[in-house]
Amino acid sequence: MIYMDKRAAKLLKWYDENKRDLPWRNTKEPYQIWLSEIILQQTRVSQGLDYYRRFVESYPDIHALAAAPERDVLKLWQGLGYYSRARNMLHTARDIVQRTDGVFPVKYEDIRRLKGIGNYTAAAIASFAYNQPYAVLDGNVMRVYSRLTGFTEPIDNPKGRKKLQHIADEFLVKENPSDYNQALMELGAMLCLPKNPRCAICPLQIYCSAYATHSVGVIPVKQAKKQKKKRFLNYLVIQSGDKIVLRKRTRGDIWQGLYDFPCIETTSSAKVAYLTETSQWQSIFGRKKHAIEAVSGEYRHILTHRTLLATFVKIQSGDKAMILPEGCEWVSLRKLHTFPVPRLIDRYLSANL
DNA sequence: CACACGTGGCT
DNA sequence: TAGCCAAGTGT
Image (cartoon, rainbow, N blue to C red; front, side, top):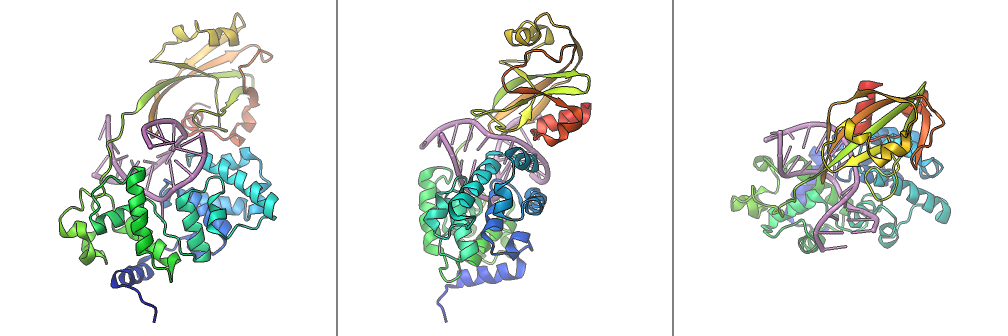
């Protein structure tokens, strides 16, 4: 009989009896586990589930993914957010196909080196797919352990995370790291919730320091967050006949690789009369024939660190041969749906075109 | 190493 | 409403 403390035994029993039936829990394929872990970064199961299904159907294995154009992959990712996840995953798929003919690495150090895979995801893949003894540390695990041990330092800085990693390493059940890691995360997702945790039915209640000291509501401790800044985006929706101008977004800003419209960004809310005087507007239209057809109301789009305030100026252009800004191209309305676009743009398009 | 990076649901 | 949160990583 392998030694295991009572806490771990109770946790594993609870997991066995209560775990959700999720598609990535019915496989040991590293590709599918990798995909699920990338999708679930900062993302709820309910939001990622359909994306996972569609992704596996479109790209059943790493070779299929590696062969896909980036635009198609981003289109499949559209609406899920954090698009660097999709770009990095494609990069890594191509990397693995080229270097090892598609064979996913087994050693933690080799997994950890892959682009888009950090400490958490490397430990998750190593333990879930290969049952190797690496302790995962995600938001769930940090919350569970900080409450269990009465950890009162902030968890959202490198120092706090490092201490919690030591706790996680120490608690890990090395005989069954796959189930143990997942049990801990499932407990965090189902019972040990950030607000209104279900302590009454928690299998670890009698071991929980925070519960004993009535501190569940104040643990884990987090540092105060900074205020969101605003960005004012004035989009030029330029149409001529059955074509519309799209812009591919590039490095160094949000939504890299996705498409939106030519944009005049201002430091505050701007009127069209102001926009038409800007050098950007002048360099596009100059004295060329064009007609402002409509100006949308203000669209508010919330990101983690930014509030975007967007208006859309719909313009009929008489000159399809005009000089477009860098990264812009004419796209037929028929093909518009094949381009990956941010949610903000998707909302505008579905309401106006 | 603080900050950037999306989106939607819940309080 | 405004803020918080959800299976983090890259720079």
